[in-house]
Length: 206
Image (tube, rainbow, N blue to C red):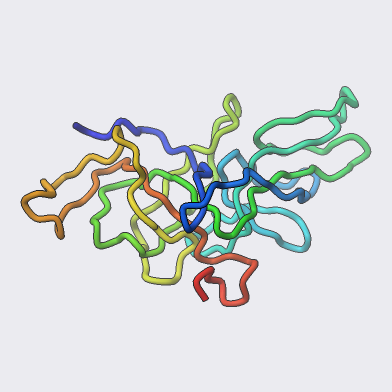
C-alpha cells in the first residue's frame, strides 16, 4: 500500500535518544520584531545575534531545536496573543516576540522525506532548504530532502523509519532482499539534531 503522506509537516517531537520519555520541555527565546522570514510550528531554528532565526536556509545549518509557538502583545489591540507560528509582526511598543523552542539536543523528531529513501541511508544526514507553512494551521509544510544527503555534513541525522504503518511502504519486498529495501516517497522517518549549536563540534555524538 502506498504511503498516505502527501504534504510535509516539518518536525514533530517524539521521544528522545535512548528511548526515554520526552518531557515536553521548551526554552523561551526571542524573535526580533518584524523578522523577515516566517517560522512555522515544526520549523528548525537557530540563534543569531541573540535572536531566533530559521535553521532551514540550507541543509547544512546548525540548529538549537524546533519552534513550538510564539507570544506577543498585538500592536493594534494591545492584547496578549499566542499563536503556533510567527509571521512578520511588530508587537506593541516595538517589543520582540517570545519564541518557545523545543531545545533538548537529544530530542527525537519525526519528519517526512521527500522521495524514496534506501535503508542504507539510515544514519546519514539530511536537511531542509526552505521555510514554508500554513497560516491557517500554523504548521510547517516542509519535507526533508534526500538530495544532498551526507555521512556527517547536514543538520539532521536519520535514526530509523518511524513506526507509522500508513507511511512505511516498502518499494522492494524486504523478505526477498532486506539489504535493498527502500521506503517510498513520503515515508516518515525519525531524526535527531546532528549540527547542534549546543556542541562545539556541531555533532551530538562528538
